[in-house]
Image (cartoon, rainbow, N blue to C red):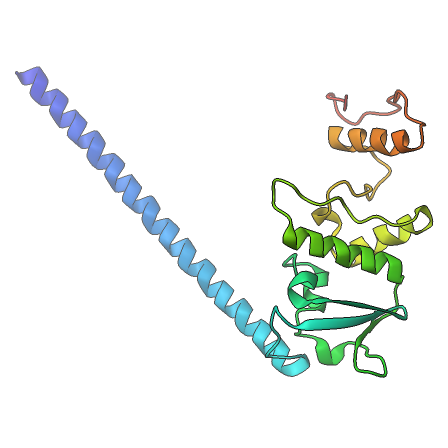
Length: 207
């Protein structure tokens, strides 16, 4: 009986310790959540102040925006243009900077960029908006002569890491995914073949 009593006491102590640690961790998470929510409120307040000073406080996702892209008019909902939060594309068309943006003679936002590439990006954003996660759209496509410009625009708008299958920003192959992508590109021109490793900075080369 004594051994059973001692075992029960030990079990009770262990359970109490676990419960105390659990409550402590919950309290820490609650404090972190409160801090994050506080910072989020501050960020939203700063966005509102920026909009009041430089843009349109009443900007809404359903707004229909016409953009003069290098002389060609590209129209889309604000929600489409701001699809990827935290990017320069989202900030540009959020409405917070409307008064600071260059406009054409009819009051449309003017961007001095290649219109074909910009339209390809907007079309892609629209496809993302209406596609499911299980069936995402193909990345934006343009004529071969404009591919470098498209890459530059995606980088400029902060969308490179949001577009799957986009050309690597570096000539250095860093992952199996990039090797597969290179095979696909070369295959389009019937130029695919075996790759030779010229230099490896790791003991685990890409295969």
